[in-house]
Length: 328
Image (cartoon, rainbow, N blue to C red; front, side, top):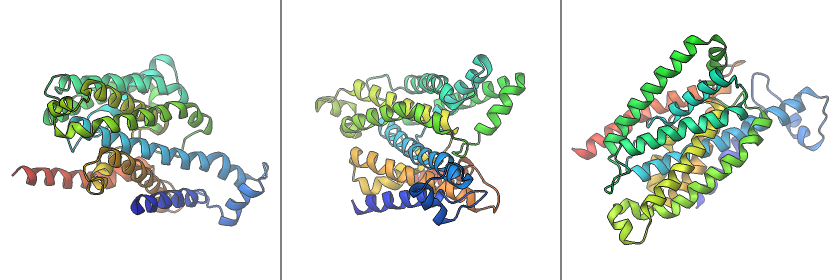
């Protein structure tokens, strides 16, 4: 409990710190003044309240959503390397976004939510079905990773094929694909908030049902768990969380992979603890990446997605090595 409280304090502290950091730093006194004595004609007050506050909230919610989605996917598939990026769900959502830009002429994040959810949903169903999740014995972890990698490559190829055909789509996509919270518009954030909250609700309902699945599908059924319903609710929660976050901030990799592994030793096999811990640590990690991106190069910003790629690449290698050693 103390660790969770500490992480909450750290995440909130980083969010408060981020209100003053950027290409143009705002003094702490001005940040406080923006909330206590707001002046709509002061550009620093506008930056703090109308832009950076939305960015901080988006980073906290997006990181929490991806961390929770990764935890659910690893439990549901019994695959410690499962996450929305590796299983192709982010690529499916990205392809849906590009289709929305190319076919429908959409550009605002709020308008891109539906195509992102459709792309993420189709990919998640394909991974689950082709990976053996529809069978009585449950999903095959290795097959799911292979299916996810194949679908990710397929959707990436289709995405770039569409971008070659449309310069306008490329112009919109290239700013979005790096993954970051700097371009989040407050109106778009509030527009997708109901879907995010619905995703969190479905995910936590699923977390209470997934505990017995760690013992195997047959054992879970013997304990009275409706395995199919549990997986369906998990799938709905994962699609809502990933699709909404991708449409809002772009594809941000590795949060869903790393966070559950860091939380698992403290969860003691309880999926509910794993879910709550992944929400808190995911929010803290995304906020950390966002703040680091503003500090590394003075006067410039690096998107949080690029920072997470630098962190997540080596982490993935370490996790794969550990899995290999565990199998030997």
